[in-house]
Every structure is written in C-alpha cells, then in structure tokens.
Image (spheres, rainbow, N blue to C red):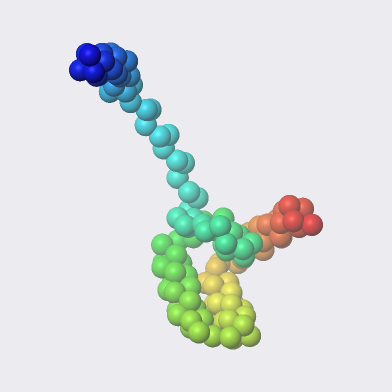
Length: 127
C-alpha cells in the first residue's frame, strides 16, 4: 500500500510539473532593451558624482581632452590616498583648475552654465 501511495505521489508531481517545465523552456524572457549610449565623456557616472563632474560629463570633449582629464583625475586620486581633508580639498581645487585649463573658451562657458543648472537642481531636490 505504501508503494502505491508513493507511486501515485510521484505520478501527480510529474503530471503537474511537466507542463510547467515545458512552459519554462519555451518562454524565454525578452532580451533587455539596449541602454541608450551615454553622452560623450559620460562612460561612467557614479552615484557619488557631484555637480562639478556631472557638468563636465555634459560637454562634448575631444579624445585628447578625455585622455588628459582621465590622467589628471587618476593622479589626483593617487595623491588623495591617505591625505587629510584639507589636502584633499586643495587637490580638488587644483584638479578643477587643471581641467578648466584644458577646456576651450566655449566649453568653459557651457560648463559653467551647466554647473549652475546642476547646483540649482540639487538645491531644489535637497533643500
């Protein structure tokens, strides 16, 4: 009697799971939609990016500018390792000045306009 109950249970599980397994095999989830390409220079926007970096990412930078800026940022990050707060702030000011020096006059105007917009948006979002 126990064997027949076991066989009945196995048959019931098989009967109910077979359609589920078949359905799972034939209905694959749709592929994820391709994300839109980020604006030029915005390959990586971390959640911690402040208005300064957000504004910088909005510019149409040339390849040389991107490479030079990336090298400046990397050097600044290395200089900030183990540095105290005042040193990190001084390094940030120096980095900002070096990056702004790489921008054309038109990019600088666009950058400062975008920086004002970013800061205003953050003030509205975080009063």
